[in-house]
Length: 362
Image (tube, rainbow, N blue to C red; front, side, top):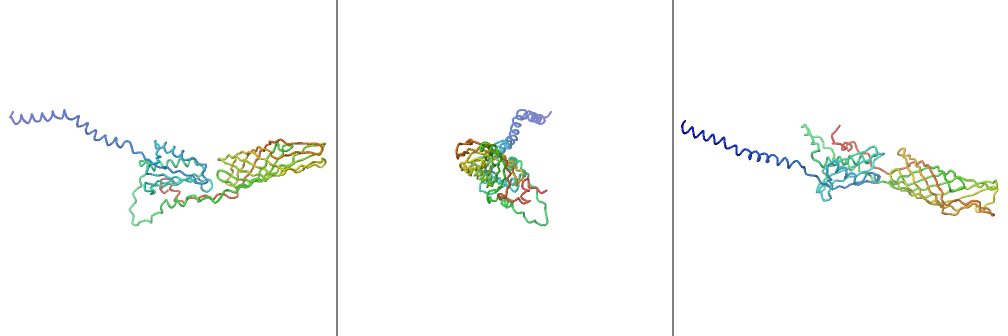
């Protein structure tokens, strides 16, 4: 074998032996270079947003900001609300015509420009469902991985006229300030006990101004005559009064206080009486439940505790025949008719209704 061949063989041998010592270090370096960027991208940056949640007049019974924030945190896996965040989310809930509940939402950047907006509608008067859908829409807006990328526009020989921006449509659907409270007229029948000589029926005509969470009512109340026998002669008493009734309402339940002012009249054909007309003054609490049957008709079942403040007695020149107890009661049933209502926001235009989803045409 020549010297040149020997040198080449030695060089080749050296070349084969060298990778045995350096291959593991090269593999570790290459794996580190590939894995480090993957690990850095494995934990996406969390979004932070300021949250401004409002309920317009007529939507006070809807859930508050706590439910929206809790649902956003559940869906995202963390609480995105931060008062120091640059991004700001504004949400408004308001009542539409009939039993509709609407919500408009916008995202604003650090300069205040609107970067995203949505309009949602719940047709079954279910505010909780509406708030859940609001949280889902905000989650999609805050998580870029969930956003649907728009498809490229097809090449056309002409350019269509651009559609009006959604912000203008959302402004058109904004709630109109209420023109005033609801005007309601009601007719009631009641059983009154512990006020006159016996349990008797009563009737009332009720008119009220109804606001979202309270009402102010005025009643004309008549308690039918109750009779007692004196020496086989009938002595009857009846009451006519006007009642002022302010009430507080929470969904279908209500609690009131009433003041009753009127006249108690006693009469008899065979018994000589003193003071056949007496001043009537009473007060007390009222509580009950309202069951709506339609947008115009509702039925109320309620009970009163009647605390008599004025003196009432039936007497003859010889003796006092009867003095009522100072506390009585009443159980009533009233049918309410809504004569006029608060002016609500107009129904959204068909284009605005498409914004509830991804905005894709059907």
